[in-house]
Length: 239
Image 1 (cartoon, rainbow, N blue to C red):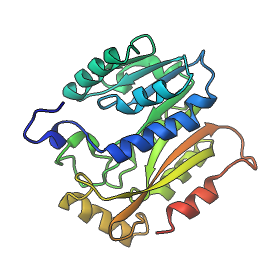
Image 2 (image 1 turned 30 degrees about the vertical axis):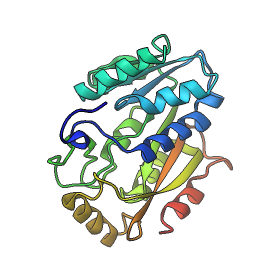
Image 3 (image 1 turned 180 degrees about the vertical axis):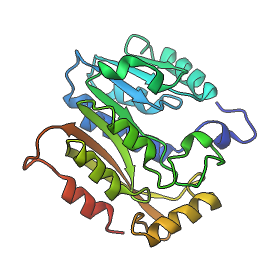
Image 4 (image 1 turned 180 degrees about the horizontal axis):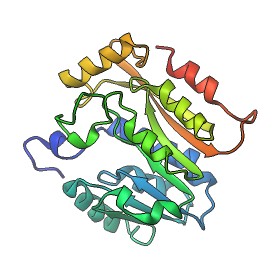
């Protein structure tokens, strides 16, 4: 589908990560969602994760996606039409934060940019997650939406991110974790150097070739026995 000589620099492509995001979206959100509510997505990419989830579930609500990459958004639009999901899923080629939709949404979903680096001069600048990789995820949590599903990387200050969520009145109500190998984007020397520095500061957790990715469902509520944050932190920092 991608004809560029450097497709991985043009559109995010990691089947393992996208499949896991799709699985988490399906099991943590769509299978339990109130279909009358609106879900908004930050960073839809080429749309495959949501499309796969919609095909596999009975969810009949609406998902509005936002994607800054023009090539990716065009591919998403084409695939949505191919699967006849235009009534359920739309992707706009504009900034998520410029739209007021998140203010009326019941849930935000995202596999947010989480590559840590000093700046965004990367293979894919839109994958830059700030100096510790958690900047965009924290910004999404700052919007105060009732539910937020985020993919959280063990090398992108996961403890700091979870602590930030707790400080904002969220609890971890459910999560799933999968081991992933370092790929094209996370193996870029500039990124690997930043990850190594974070590890020295106790903000990144990984083995030689493996890191952990968690799909985490945060929900606004009072602290309760259902809060799984401690268990999540223990698992995310185990490497």
